[in-house]
Structure formats: structure tokens, C-alpha cells
Length: 350
Ligand SMILES: NC(=O)c1ccc[n+]([C@@H]2O[C@H](COP(=O)([O-])OP(=O)(O)OC[C@H]3O[C@@H](n4cnc5c(N)ncnc54)[C@H](O)[C@@H]3O)[C@@H](O)[C@H]2O)c1
Image: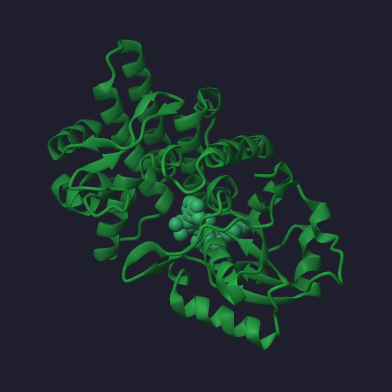
């Protein structure tokens, strides 16, 4: 994977060599009214733009079809380039469309949420939801460039910063103890956070992992830390029409997974560090005025969650294959988690 695929603070990205290829833009519609970092206003002024109302609902066949229709209407060819600007839902949808239209055209991702910068835009996965299942249709296709610029974060609502903070924490917990030590002394809304540094560190952890396992046959699975439980919570929330953000659900999932990891650790100081990490995540989740999703999540019945965990696409048999930490900064994958153990650690976690 080439190093120059990634550009940090990429104002040069917008100085295109016109003539080689036409550019088309897909953007989160929030930037029709929000201030856009100056370097990018030119993109909206110079090229055809298709606006997407972001959110999980945009990751649908209907929205994908609308964009394919739009690309036809502006006479896009397979030699043209799509520039996709937005959070994880916009980049997942846009990259899916780009990777399938005319068997795939070039695309550039410009993530605008913290979650997008450290996670969704990195790693070449895209997708839409289908038949009630998250990301069940999609491809593995790398963009030609990923332009990561933390200036976009200036307008990001607090709640979205917290969601991204959870994925950033996940990367530190599975792959970088030093980054975790730095994060645990911060809160996501500190005014003096060096976002450039954190975003670069967070995205690099994922980059390194996917370099060794692009198609998720092994190590890449550790990026799902906290997600089996998080996805089960999201499924129960969706059924009961309870609003629950992906990052928040993953945060709760990581707390329970840390408890499970601590229960497997034989060394007392390691056990202590894992439990301490769970408390730190809880502090961030609860301190940000998130009483409702916290109470809702922690009062769920673990047996009901278990039935959703069994359906997780990472499982290969009847067991739930999940990811425990061996210690902070190191994770194992494909470890069987028994129902009884899950219920016990769920009870101990809150
Ligand atoms: N492909 C992958 O590898 C991968 C990895 C992790 C997550 N994801 C996906 O990412 C999605 C979640 O992404 P997300 O959290 O970025 O959600 P999102 O795209 O819905 O963005 C969250 C909200 O922030 C708004 N927003 C975006 N940028 C903004 C900015 N700069 N200023 C103000 N508002 C802004 C959006 O309009 C939206 O309301 C999920 O669908 C998840 O499945 C994909």
C-alpha cells in the first residue's frame, strides 16, 4: 500500500491537473450550509456536486441508485474521478458507488468526521445496508487518495466527536499502548487537543494492520474489538427505535470486552490495567451528558443481546468468535466466547 495514498493537511489536493480526467463531487449535504475549510470551497464551486443527506439511512440501494443515475446524467466515464466528502456514511456509500459504476472509477476520499478520519475512510472497505443487515453489500476497493485534514473537525458536533473518540480509543487499545496512555489523560472536548497528531496516530494504526491483512482473514479482525457486542446493542436499539450512535455502542461493547479480557488475564497488574481502561471509557461515555444511552445500554438483557451476537458475520460456527485484549496494545482474534461467560462479564462490567 503506497505511503503517498495518504495526505495529511492536503491543500495541494485541490490543485488538479484538469484535462486528464473529469472530477465529480459527492458531498454530505451538511456542507451546503456549514462553513467549509477554505482549501475545499473550490471543489464545490468548480465541479458538479451530488449532495447526500448523511446518516445510516443513506447507506441504501435507493441512494446508491440515485447516484448511479446522476453519474449517467453528467456523462461520467470510467476514466473520471469521484471526490467523496463527508463522514463514514457518505464515504461508505460514495466509495461503494464509485467501485461499482462502470466496473469502478477512481475515487478520492475526504473524511470530515473524526470517525471517518481514523477509521471509516481507511482500509478500502465500503458498503450499504441491505435487508436490515449492516454493510451486507459492498466491496473491498482502495481509493486513489485519502485526504485527511483535521480542520473539518471545527464544525463537528460534540456527540460526533465522542463517537470518533471511541474508535480512536479502540485503535489505541488494540495496537498502541503509548497512544492509549496519551488519550487517557485527555477528554474529547479539551480545547487544546492536537487533532493533527491524534488523527495521524489513530489512522496509522489501522493502516499498519490492513497492510498485513487487507481482506480480513486474520489480524484485521482485531479492529472489530467491542463491535460484536456493539452491533448487538445497535440491532436491539433499531428494533425498539431507540437512538443509539455506532461509536457509543462500540464504547459500551469495549467496556464489556475489557472485562472479559481482565477475566482471562493471570497477571494482577495486567488485570488492573484492563479494568482501569474500562473505567476510563465509562467516564468518557457518561461525562458527556449521555445519561440516556448509557442507562438504556447497560439495562439491556444479555441473553437477548446474545441471540444477535450469534448472528455476527465474523462467526464461523455456533460459537461467538470475539476479540479479547491480551494486554493494552495487543489483541487476539477468533477467541470463542461462551454465553455464560458473556453473561457473567456483562454483569460485572456495570
Ligand atoms: N468502511 C469502514 O471500514 C468503516 C469503518 C468504521 C465505520 N464505518 C461506517 O461509518 C459510519 C459512521 O460514520 P460517521 O460517524 O462519520 O457518521 P456520519 O457520516 O453519519 O456523520 C455523522 C454526522 O456528522 C455530520 N457531519 C459530518 N462531517 C461534519 C463536519 N465536519 N461538521 C459538522 N457535521 C458533520 C453528518 O452530516 C452526520 O450528521 C457507519 O455507517 C459505519 O458503519 C465504516
